[in-house]
Image (tube, rainbow, N blue to C red; front, side, top):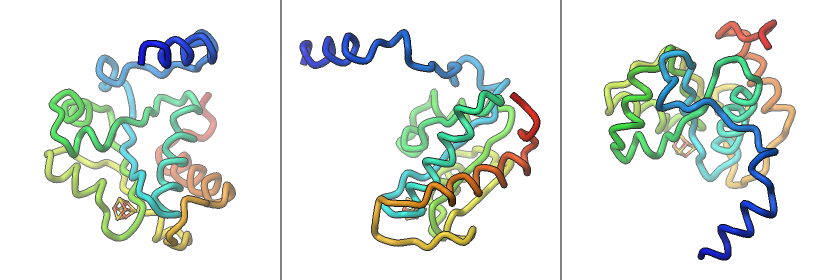
Length: 148
Ligand code: SF4
């Protein structure tokens, strides 16, 4: 285990990784994105869109949806303290929205990939163009275009 850790830190070089702002400390200044990472085409697109918006440097930061679902107080508080909450569901089951509702987290923007012209299929593959198009639509809606 120890050896594995050493290999990761030395092999990749943490100094070259792009670090994100701390969602615990800076939630009030961030749009927190909770996305589905479901095991289907649409779940994967949801996750990729969240990543795309996070790395744009526009004050959006994805946070751990599963941790909120598991009841982690720290993560629930991130959602409650966020500047705005953006939810990206994979399909009509809207699992991420349901998690937020169950934990009393207010959703400011809600999207569902299967309702945005992407077919739900039992695959982890997806089209980058769908990710690009949907990320652009959300960026437009929430006012990121022209920033960063
Ligand atoms: S919303 Fe759909 S794709 Fe996402 S976790 Fe739930 S069932 Fe899976």
